[in-house]
Image (cartoon, rainbow, N blue to C red; front, side, top):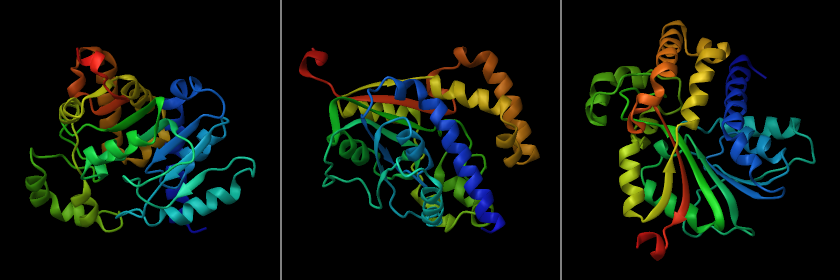
Length: 272
């Protein structure tokens, strides 16, 4: 295992451990044997962690721009995983033709929809595989906050303008195929998602729970801040202290993290 592979694997495993903590309350509300579907599962570290709690897990991960290295990391993780913990990995997009043997009791899209140009299509396709009592959890950056976390650059109102100003930084990124990666970004905001979900007649709820976990992580996880570099790491730490104090006063549309539950399409009774 080369040093770069080991470094990146450590980061992905750390991210999975963090999101396991974020999701723990919701995961524990499910009955044993429930079916959890993860969209955009990456190397599968989070899916394997969820499966270890006694759930059936299906993980979708198509090969997308900037992520082809994840397959080798997944093989490595599966090789280290206990044989009684397994995940059904599907190397494909979840689309309108997707079929599952069992409906999903919980669908997860963690740091995914910002990479999806057609968010409406993704949500519609996901809800088709949901059980009647199931839900979908979305967590992603809020691009109403002027910062692009993948390239660690400020955003300048419009994606096109930001690209022109920061093109050199984007091209120098360590991501595979950074230009394709950039063009795939959809820049979701809480307000744009709220508008979309309302148009789709969905029953949804935006929460602050995920953001609270991010604040605690920035204040207490030294590995997380260190890997961001001394300047970005210190900046995140300072903002975390500020947000910890004023977070309840910030409109939910302006907090840096979007955390949303979608419960399905509203009934006629809900609309009356």
